[in-house]
Image 1: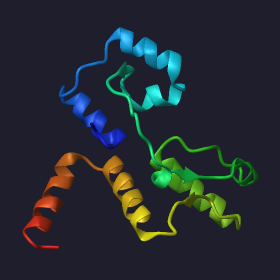
Image 2 (image 1 turned 120 degrees about the horizontal axis):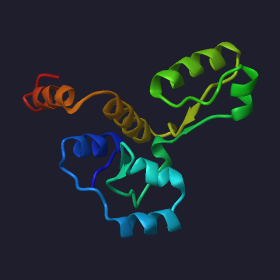
Image 3 (image 1 turned 90 degrees about the horizontal axis):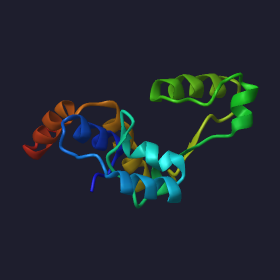
Image 4 (image 1 turned 120 degrees about the vertical axis):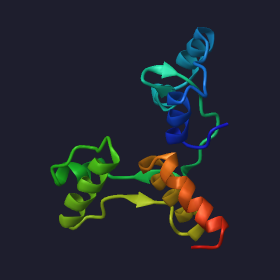
Length: 134
């Protein structure tokens, strides 16, 4: 079990995962929305399937607010940051996340961080923390 899409991609690129069988892929095609197949695919090859999801890391936005600000829905994190600035500058909140409780924000931050850095950047930080240097 791999908790984040970015980790699944790293595992696949390091050849730590084998592609799912064609039979499994047909089952996914027949029973899941295409977005779920995309989350489990790396370079067009289905390597896994997320069987559980939580909305604590979901980012919500109002398509009309993006349209009004002249922004297309972002496809990358950098595009999301740019879109957020433009929409916020128009006077409308750009995005919403589940942040009423602090723990959801820590999980959200972890997911954003892990999607933007490599494992080689994460390991030194974890090692320093375990030695009491943070």
